[in-house]
Each structure stands twice: as C-alpha cells, then as structure tokens.
Image (cartoon, rainbow, N blue to C red; front, side, top):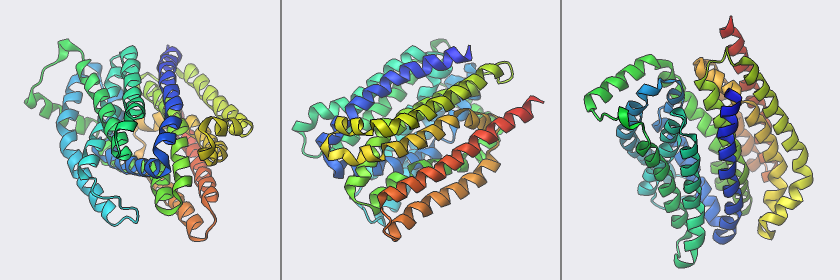
Length: 402
C-alpha cells in the first residue's frame, strides 16, 4: 500500500519535474548568467526565511488527523502573511550589507516568502486528503506559469529579473490557492475562535516541533541554500549561475522525490509497513548509486543539451549527482527523525554540519582554490551529514519498535 502511494506521488511529480528539466535551460539561455545568479541568490535567501515563517507546519500536516486539515489550512492563511512581512523586513536588513546588493527587494521578498510557504505547506493538504491527481495537475500548471510564461513574454519586457520573479511568485500563490479551493467542502467552517483554539491545541500537542523543530528547520534551510548565496557572493557569475541551473534541473527534482517519500512515510504506521519501507530504502540507495555511476559518462551529453554557454554546469553535474544520492538515501531517515521528534540531537549535528559547509566554501574562496574545490567540499560534507540522518533515523525506528 505504502509502496503504491509513493509510486503514485513520485510518478506524477517526475513528469512535472521533467517539464522543469526541459524548460529551465531555455530560461537560462534567454536570461543570461547575471540574471540567473541573482535569481537563485534571492530565492535562496527567501527560502531560508520561509523555513521560519512556515513554523515547520509541513511536519504537522502529515501527522495530524485529516479532519483537522481545514483548520490547519486556515490557520496558515492567517499566520503566514504577518510572519512573511517580518521575514521580508529581516531579509532587507540582511541584503543592505551584502556585497551583492542589487537594490530594494522588500515587496518582492515579501511575496516570494508568501508564495514559497503557500506552495510548500498548503499543497501538502492535497496530499494528506489523497487528492494526488489534483496535486499533480496544479503542480504541472505551477511549473508552466513559473517557466513557460517568462520564456514567451521575454521579448516584450526589458527587466528579465523581475519577469522571472513575478511568475515564480504567481506560480507559488496559485498552488497554495488551489489547495485552499480543494479543501473538503463539508468540513469548511471559517471561525476565528475555533482556529485560535486549534492553534493553541496544535502548539501544545506538537510542542517539540515548534521549540526545537523550527531552529533545526532553519539550520537545514541554511545548509541547503548556503551554496547559492555564497557562490553568487564570492565567485564569478558564470560559475554560480551554472550551479543554479543544475540546482533547478536536478537538485529540485531530487528534493521533490525526497519530500514525497518523507511525507508518505510520516503519515503511515511504520510498524505495519516495515517491510515495504525497507524495500523503498534499498531502492532509493540503488537509484542514487546508479545516478552517480552514469553521471560521469553522460556529462558531455548534458553539456550539449545546455549549450556552449553552460559547459561549466556539465562539468559540475557528477558532483551534484553525488549530493543527490546522499539526499535520496536520507528520505526515510529524515521522516523517522521528524516522526519521533528527535530534533534536539539533529539540531546539534546540523549546527556543526552548517558551520563546516560555510567554512568549506569560504576557505576555497579565501585561498583561491577555485569554485570546483568549494563545490566538491560542500558535497563531501553534505554526504557525511546525509549518511548520519539515514543511520540515525533507522536507529530511532528500531528503538520505537521495541
């Protein structure tokens, strides 16, 4: 049962991500390395802020009873706009002293953070209520809006950066809005008093998720997004843009698979589905290893597909595949850690991991070791951390089965 659920979720997501795989090289070719690097830079900063704004609700969505989904969704609609404003103001202060300060992005980052949370948290409500087909349909439309529309409209607009950002924001808000519209109609009851009571219940029922989970989620967002920020700030635009192209073409789809597996494993009874979960773990490791093995011989084909301006991206592709293998392998482990609220231990490890990732990139820059060394160092540290998450998660699973 769980195996079929994961295949259904991954299958539809794979088609959507394949569309993104096809469209983003065209976007990169049309808009150029400067715009792509700034685009990835700002998206990463917004993603880090969004990790605090969403209050780790994505974990609660998969653990909570389906009958409470409506209240959870409406609570998000009330909390997120205010929290996004606070985060956008913090972002603007951060950007002021950055070496790559492109101007005032307050309004842009506000709506960007809002759209990230709408697409990430509210869309999970469709998965929780088993509206998988609707989720895939709306996600497909989201990718079309985010990437196809800018390609079509690029000849008519001079400011390519804001064109990309505008449709990225619209696509995220669209997905969140679709989730709200598709909530179970019979359960809709907009009542502020009930929502306030629900928020209080949610806090005390999932206290660890808020007190420890939010800081851990913030660190996790930093560790995943720090390359985009530091690479753009410290290295040349072509190298950083090449990484962002790979990020959108490969890292993002791998993240979708990781989250799909994680969400399903969190929402089912682990004990009664233990054999299927073990099979899925083996399959994920096998996919990751196969991906690494074929990445080196096919990198030239990737370069041909991307075009002559993005040959650097092809050179970095094998290292991204190694990162992807580790990230795929930790899907189930991270699900168990979230399910059993083992955030305190993970927070400490992730704190050390984040420091090492930052140091690896900075030292490579400071001593002129080059972008490739920075990337390889980052991937190596990520692989160690992902291995830990995988092992720790399965250890917790074994402890809780006794």
